[in-house]
Length: 353
Image 1 (cartoon, helix red, strand yellow):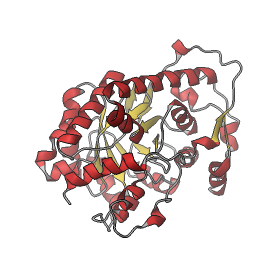
Image 2 (cartoon, helix red, strand yellow):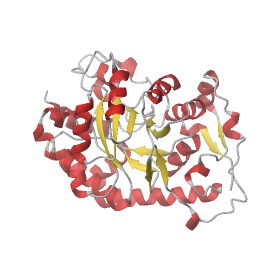
Image 3 (cartoon, one colour):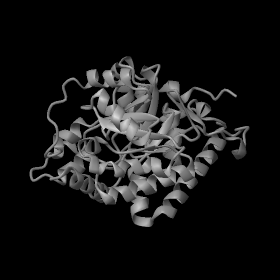
Image 4 (tube, one colour):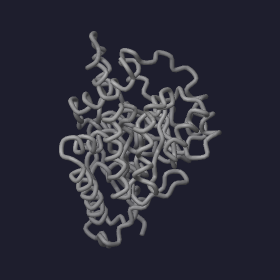
């Protein structure tokens, strides 16, 4: 099967398998504030990812590219929407365009229609520094995501089977790159041990890409004759991964993604420690099924809803929202306790004005 055909298959299977609600956010409850002492028009959504200062904590996360004319149209629409709404966009893996120049238009289109916005390039951990530079230059990227998708590759019939030396290659990319390097998991979450290694390797930010959203193990199992179904429930829930990294890993920005679908999910991800939250499958479904105008309307509604939630909490900025008191319960509380994370830290903090 060609790489382009596989990309289209991924889109179709992602829409078919849908979004799970197993990301852990239902185990997170905000502590109500009766005297928030703020107003909706005072809310500031600016945030920081490493050295980047962004006007919104919401970004469209990596989905597709390299699937021919169909993905050109999808990426054009996504990038146009990102420009209209003032949010960053990450493209899907650009390795297909590095190996086949005819696939470049499906990526280059994002900068063509979004000349001033923040764009993130994307490659897998097999990439070299030279390939990373090519990917960055291809879309004039402001940062580059290096994605980790071991389980997806193992389930993928034609996937990789050797993951040796990934950290060394990422370190080389971070050292050579002129833009910040973001390492992103692809739906299986990240623990503190891996995050610490990546921070020490020079990575600027980690996107936890937690369990609970688009399930790439299920997607690849849809393409197999013999299922590896034991991987369908494999991973660390998004809420758990963000909280563990926040409590244990200093000196690096945390991005939340994995099943995020609305403003409340975003607010909870930020309160757990994320600086920004990525949405992929949920936005893709709206675009494919309801069209461009519906996507733009949804993004703007999410931004407005986030301002309303922050107002109710008395959090005038993203940094204040990161200190909003939250109560953790259920499986999220259990896993974090087992990992020696002090959950009372989250419930007893206060927002400093």
